[in-house]
Image 1 (tube, rainbow, N blue to C red):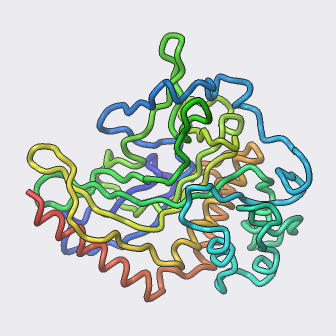
Image 2: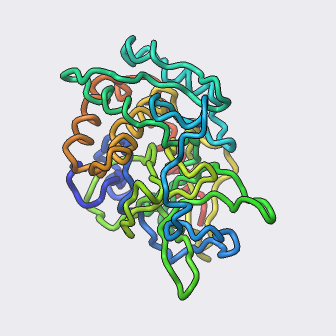
Length: 340
């Protein structure tokens, strides 16, 4: 789909167009239009005693607390403790040969556990503005991995009705930190709740064509600037959240409206695609949120950075992507045909 359409994700409707073989694409988003097609999903109020976005304690940005911690003078990202993408693995991904040598040389494991240093003070070079923007993310973001859930319509059409990134975050503890969440904030009476999305993308524009959700960028309350349409992340560190899909499963509503999936292993996302989505989310979305700039897909800097990254990382031409696409198409067709 066109980047300026109102739906920022889109998906190829393979069930409706079996002979057309539309190109499966990958999209990230600044999450401002996350879907909630099957009703509201509430987080338990007992986990939200901080007040979230309405609490000054939660809304403030991370503070500098000493050497090795939250140093805004260095661009770095932290890895959420629940993530299966380890700091070493993420460092390796950010040193992928498809990225410029000047960028790779600036990536290293930090002295503080679970921190990765990124290139800083990168000059704004024509054609590589994405790298300059990425160097400005400061120390305001955590990364975690996710399972992308693709949900199919009931019947055998194979039409995709929704996608959801099921991210790995830290659970809460009794009397201690609440469970980490993401979603929209609402006040119900005197209580503040977080509305979790049932979908991050819904098929409310059936004639649009686009692709998979490869990642999602969710700011903290301070960076969201109290916009009620933007999801916020409520992490223990008070940082924003960058989510990157590393595996995909396909589910379907059966005749009794129960979600089911075949007993098959998740499909791993190719490494070249994880690299693309990781760099995209950091430079096209996280950096914009950090600077207080528009982070949605129709903003000029986001579109420019997205185009530069896709031109540089030629993931569509890779054999790994082509194999992944074929396997995913087969899984969708098999799930649509098998589950009644």
